[in-house]
Length: 146
Ligand code: HEM
Image (cartoon, rainbow, N blue to C red; front, side, top):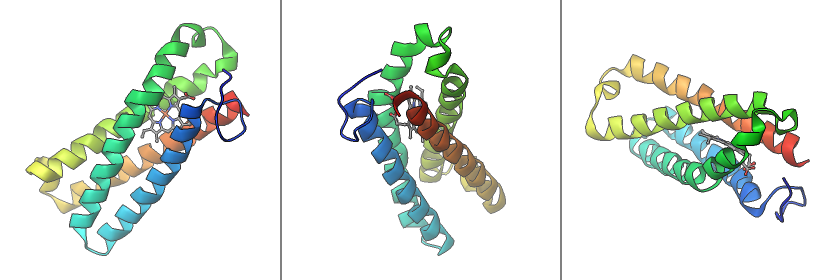
């Protein structure tokens, strides 16, 4: 698990880039939530779309390849923190799928877009899952590369 990243850790360049990008996406996501609270739903939706699509690219380009590369050894190797990696994959995957659903649902008027209170609950669940995925990913980075 050694690489030539730019943060001076054992991580690869891609893992460092992913870490920074995920933090930027969190900031963008927070700003998008603040826009929604101010009633600016159009900007909220645009920024959420950017966040969800950018994250999908990072999953496909960085996290999925690493996941499948370490999968055969991770099952029996405690140093790869399987107890952290598998929950991260599940929570992160669910967060991304719900995020994609929310973005599309608002765009084409699927059920979630109809009732304000169920929409709010859905968004809260999404925020909790996303935060858990982010915390889990940062923990993975710390345990693998520091
Ligand atoms: C909302 C969704 C997600 C967020 C916010 C997130 C966040 C993060 C963060 C911050 C890192 C640390 C940076 C790094 O080591 O690259 C990371 C690493 C990782 N994540 Fe995710 N993640 C998400 C979804 C997923 C999914 C769906 C998978 C399953 C394929 C996954 C698998 C991994 C793996 C294997 C790593 C280590 C990558 C490496 O070091 O090369 N993540 N994630």
